[in-house]
Every structure is written in structure tokens, then in C-alpha cells.
Length: 106
Image (tube, rainbow, N blue to C red; front, side, top):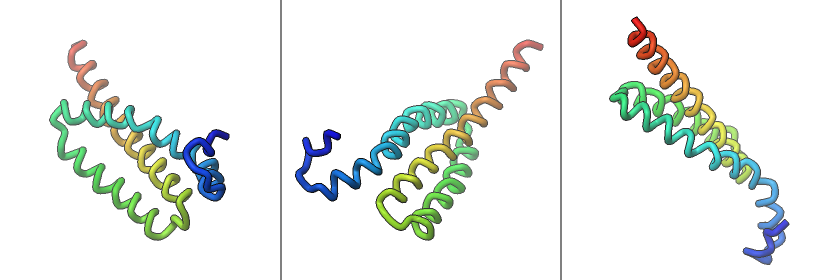
């Protein structure tokens, strides 16, 4: 564990050793989320984008307010937020890509 490189506070090192896998996964998923979101923006599908943001933000804020009890819970919520957005955006990009591909083949 290299947490001691940044701090001598053993409580903080311990906390980060529990949180870092969820933090790392959430941050690893973020570029894919942004790429899918960029595809939706490029396709001028702003109505869908706004609608999904409203829904996913309600889920995120609800989880932060009513479920999260600690710092680890915050990163669980952020990871869930990223996974929801990847699912929403990925399904939309897939659907629109499949739809445009089938139209071109006709």
C-alpha cells in the first residue's frame, strides 16, 4: 500500500484503501460515459440527454441523501451514477446506430 506516500495519517490511508477500488472504477468508466454522451450530442438528441440526466441525477441525489452513510457510500453512488449513464447512453447510441444502419441497407 503506497498511501503513506501522500499522508502520514493512518486513518486516511485506511479509508482510501477501502474507497480506491470504487473510485478507480468510477473514474475508469467516465471516459466511456463522456464518449457516449458526445455521440448523443453529435446526433442532436438533446431531449433524450436532458431526460436521462434528470432521471439519473434524481437517483444520484436520492442515494446521496437517503442511503449514503459515509465516504465509501459517496463513491458507491458515483459508480452507480456512471453505470446508469453508460446504460442509458449506450442503449440510445446502439439503437440509433442500428436504426441508421438498417435504413442505409435498404
